Length: 611
Image 1 (cartoon, helix red, strand yellow):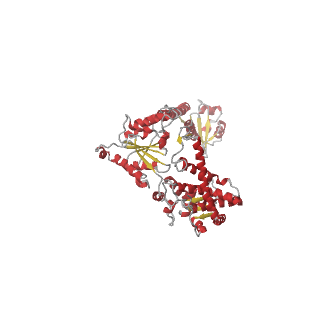
Image 2 (spheres, helix red, strand yellow):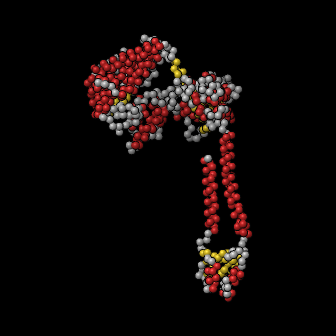
Image 3 (cartoon, rainbow, N blue to C red):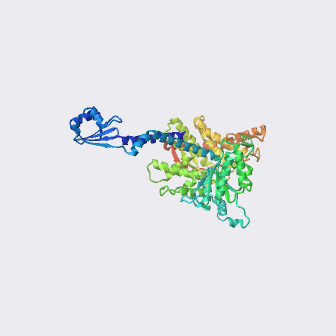
């Protein structure tokens, strides 16, 4: 429809242009049209210098140099016309009379053009319509063709392993794939078979796509990129056809790399979908399996796929011969985060006092994409404040914005709510400070961010990969501290502790059902989550325990929460004065940094152990 409208507008513009052209040629602003009576009068008054007869037109040039044009009847001569108007022949003796015959091209143009012009315009319109129909037919014929994007890696934007910070182990695994692609004979002479596929596993934003591009850049081979969702269409068989088309393109340019992003869109476990074994997604998966290691053997074509849901993939995809390598890409540690920050700040002006190591220390659990977003938010904040370089203040503010949300300084709250928030956050910070297994407090604020009315920012000293039972109990105690302070100071609790209570309950349940840390129920897990593929959500959890055990789980959750709450209450009671000092400072300053917070607690008291 859009193309039809475009063709009609183009046709209309051409018509207007042709009409304007003929109008330009037909107009003669220097010649005045007059009647025959006027010409006769001027002849009788001896004002005419010359007459030029051309067809049905009589061109008059007066003695004063002006020009006129008279239209006479067709087929009537000038002499007959003048005789009919009784013009004295003596008046014509001083007038130069000339008769011009029309030229051949103008004569035929005058006859043919009135008929040819409409036909020409109709022909142009039909031609545009036919071209549009041919384009639609060609798109219909290519409906089952692959739309994979072939990246040109010969330009200056080619990505290599040097452009990927961190992920040292993953790069070592993928470097062997590069060796296979660049020097295949070296391995074939030893009987080694080139890997069919490499599966990149990792959380969102850890750099799976970037690593795949780096492999293609290092190997200097064609790189085809396609998302798993691009295979799936509402028509059965289209996805399988696109898979065949993709591998046909790849074979023609082998050695090459085929990268399928989010392969879980088509690689989910078969037999569990709503459409049985004949739906479009499963046919697409079957074709991928055949192309990777079936009768159709792809020489020197390596398939690299990425997913953050390896648990839902079909087992046939993960067997040797298809995805031979499974490379896990973890979230970066402290050193890797610092290297990633150095990569992303290359084109950003920084103040001299900026310490990227401190930024890396404050961002545990951040992925590469999170760090890039952090620096972008810091740059936006710097531009908003009309500064020329990014400072530590902007970077710290960006960290809090990414973790919690943007500041809402315009939010107007009453003095009572502000006081409740101050005591609530002071309770979190105080308990976290005195618990040995809690992360150090970096900042306490009662300025609203995101959906939180205030926040206590705790950052671990080092990256942790294992957590003990005492770590979780201390975390529950910190979460309960705000609730306990509200009840102790104001005599009742508010809805501000809802999120804390939900998180505390979740941690306590995980201690029992996932980690087996309950002394009463023993070292085992409870419940098995099974995914039913319906609207992409987990809607079923299999209970492998009885109702009696369920009651024991509930009792253990209550026991853990009560135990942690008792320790938090003891800390708050023993440090009541310090609690009030912190709350008063928050009411005045609204925000306390780590140094300010620790100064309010000096001299430090002995640490309190929870267990």
